[in-house]
Length: 285
Image (tube, rainbow, N blue to C red):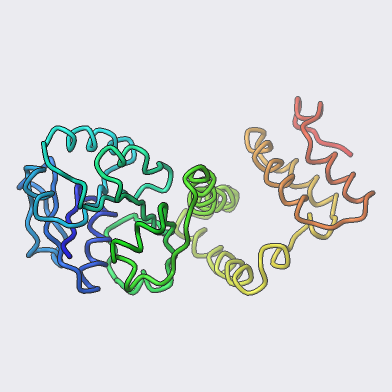
């Protein structure tokens, strides 16, 4: 089986390295950048193509690993190639887009989305060892043979693809944003960015470990869990006015995770609502 990739970005090269490590033959990469493209040194023996028909012609499985908004363009270009694609497998790596547009090329289509972030091409392939893959059209993926050495995967229904991707983005992207939100408060104490990150990192790591061991609800600590109205009020007064809505939104979600007595819940709920006190940022209860 030979696998070719249309698009040689961080995801495309990382998947190529994974499949190469697992013994699959990488037929090459197509890129509009052509010979200017520089592949990871571990892919140095892999050919680079500037003509789509040549790469597709020698590949049994074709991965379209371009940015999401370019998938339809690639499909349109492939449709003009005049090639019979019916015996070939096509996949894309988007977590958000369904495989609907790929069906213009073949019935053998699926998507494979690794639940991990790719700030760079994967440096250590052991990073994939415990990674789960979200697979759309799971039966076709299994038929393709690529599942032989990927054991951690689950199927996604096409109509639920956006919900799947929203979950992944919240966990990955918004976790980064929340940590940056917290870091900003430490930097207002006079710490620089590097010092602040070093100071809070053991707390981040410990929290993630607790979630892994206990689950989210049991790992939750802090003033909302304790029902500490006065501390929440102090936080709201300490934050700059533009950050209060974000704190409150996070607090409201956190409150839903708790099991407080009705009176305590109501007090916290009222404090975390938008109210007239926001006009002068003088919050009282």
